[in-house]
Image (cartoon, rainbow, N blue to C red; front, side, top):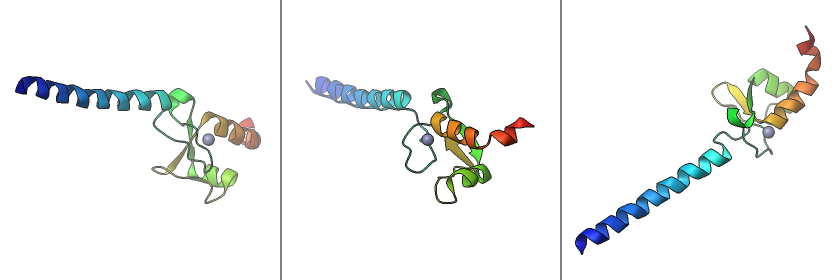
Length: 91
Ligand SMILES: [Zn+2]
């Protein structure tokens, strides 16, 4: 009897962990560094990282959240940034 109760408790914990992992792989782990944007900036989601200087040019110094000296941004924010910075890409 005691053994059964123990086994059930263990299984419950395992379920909880599995759920956690599933959610994070589906949703992505890195959120976009642009304020007001709640998309994901993971590489698997097409995210990119910009330098802080690039982010300031585009979103202003309070409009983004830096991470280790870079700003992780989602695919659509990167597209917006690229559009604005087309000229620099030309040469
Ligand atoms: Zn974004």
